Length: 385
Image (cartoon, rainbow, N blue to C red; front, top):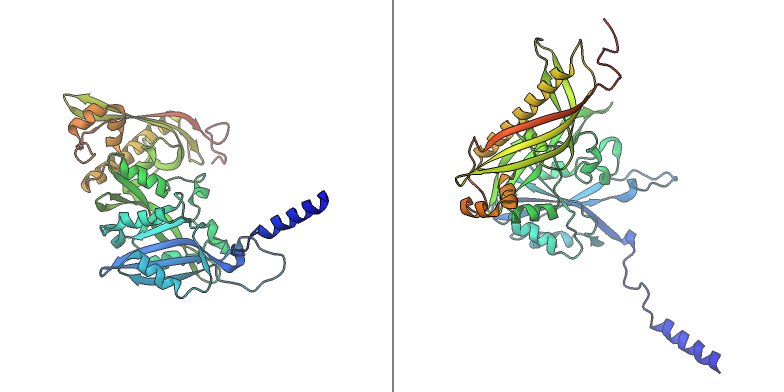
């Protein structure tokens, strides 16, 4: 009798279980990899990149070639209106949980509603704080249509996964939505968003190809877009933040005409000290580096290399700082350094979260090159003349 009762109870419990009846099968969904946002004539222009996962996990059986992605486009008075226009032409469910980046045009950043756009993505229940943010001057559609080298999956592209190239060079630091919000809420209430450009330096045996490159920053504050720091004007940023980075400088050797040397640099640490005198503040910087020499011509000493590195890095930092002053940007977040280390003085002199900066505010830059690694046992040339 007890066995029958247990059987009846078990069958009843099984019937009450819902299982996975309400779950959509993976092959019946479209996956968003990136979103591009433009703003023209009072309307939002939305570009939705839906990724094809066929190249991520390939089967052994031959399959016909498929496009790596498709780009949808719609306009609307609000961003949400544009998205719903796109939904009407989509024949499967959209999954937002794999979205990896958000790309702004210059006009979208200049629009006063750029910050609410970011807020909208954070409020969506499927999106995450790890979404990377970029800006560009190139047409957004052209940037989204760029495919990785050798037809790799879009999940391996520069925009989807920029950290894969950090071991080679970390000239531009990626910024996700979490770090963007933190930077906007902390003094100086400005954030450097990586700037994307289309690079045309590559080609195949059939035709030239294009790739995306991170070549600088666009600076955004709570009040909107402030300007760009690109190429040589932005190189000093990589040396001024505490995170380890890897970069390069090209130095001119002393007493040698037209003799240059490119050095790989690994930044070990950066310390910024606010110096307060009579309610005026200046900043001293201490940077420690290691250097690796990959190739050179003729005889060269470690002292020559150290002097050249120190001169080149100082020049890059000073140039970036000066370019930041031109567009009223605290590019090295010096205001935050004072806020963290001497909040009383910061409260006295700050205005809208920023402390007043001049050409002389960055008073001292101390650079120490700990090691100079020649890559071989000696500084002698591998091939003697």
